[in-house]
Image 1 (cartoon, helix red, strand yellow):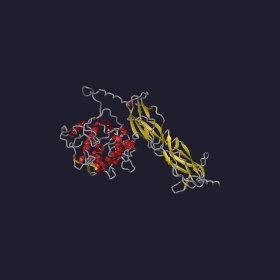
Image 2: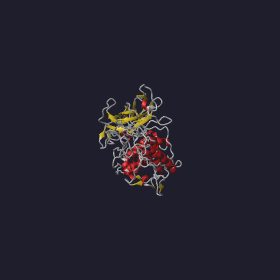
Image 3: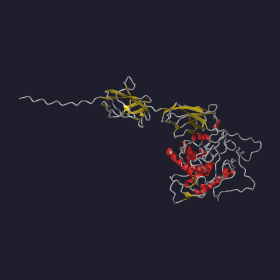
Length: 574
């Protein structure tokens, strides 16, 4: 079976026909109606693809071939001890999931439930895609940390029966410096992994050959664009964005439905390998498949695969010499360049959402706007800024005016400049770069939270600590850097050498505190202040990033002497 990996044959018409019939048989036998999962959501046994699906360029896999084996027609048999997760069942070998691979799927789904709860990603969807892409990492041939024992590579995407994708990673991921190949248990092409890759096992690396990394990346890929996978249309969109094939959609949905009803854990390395790939001549079928249609062939007569060609004219086969009709160009074919559509200056403080959004217009060579074109926006540079939703890439379709508006940018904590690059998906035209910057958090106003006088006796400590609140444009200014200094005078901001002071960790006297920061409520509470033997009025100045400043008076004075009551006057003598 392992020889099936790496084969590259053209897909035959019979494979598509039988696959569709087999899926229909599977749906009829396993799910006569809409079923419900453990969370009470509708499942997808009888789902129909949504007609207005939008997918990203070459998808996660670059349109690489996939395994079309279908689940057993008999549903898995639950066992009495089944508790959670849908894994407490027995079943045939091809239905089991290797232990490490199963753990990777479940941990990835749990992580997405925390970071993107609105996506409603079921781990069974990752399992279904993993089954179709690599046969669950070749039957679970992985090391203890989840890395495949040998690389899993799709065929080179050289345009010979597959998409044409010249090398994008200099062979770093796939070992091929001429053409790209899909890599790993979830079959990411290098250009997609570059932005979609994740570290799922916490080893500090993003490795497409590691099932934990690949499963988490696949989860984020499926959850982008704000999709809710409990909604049928969004589920279909997500699956087709992974590999834009109706056969792929049907096959993944079949395994998703099967795994929702239950599966069982098997030891690593013991899983069965799929036998029918989408570029094979041999059609897939459920196992067993007593109702699958079959057409006997004459021994020794190979089936004839179909090849892409223009359809014959209506009424019969094409006649020699008849010119092939020129295909109508798609909107994408007509794009000549991209233009900025009025994007304002892109700047935001760390942690804030950018108030302006990027707008890009697709145009023909004559400057005419082009609608229904996919524009990919990619964040480039050393930054932790993302689009809302946490992704660094977003694909938007241009509207009737030819304009695509990128999702809002959410600034991270790293300050500095970065670039957002707009490119046309499926068209080799020059990209358009937008410069953006993240500045440090700032405040424009500081105010004390109390008006209590700050006093102390010589050699003592102040009873109250200084507390201030920072705001910016009237809103709370959290995370703003600040400095506190006991200054010489209002006209001399140098550090004072006498009077009140703070103490460092070793109890030593300090009169300047750096590295301070306001809390989530914009509040900064300074450490305790102490006084030496010098009396008088002293000044504490607090400065923040952005120019906010506040001077606070501190008074050191001896305690007032108690006043004695006067003795009563002697009564006048008689």
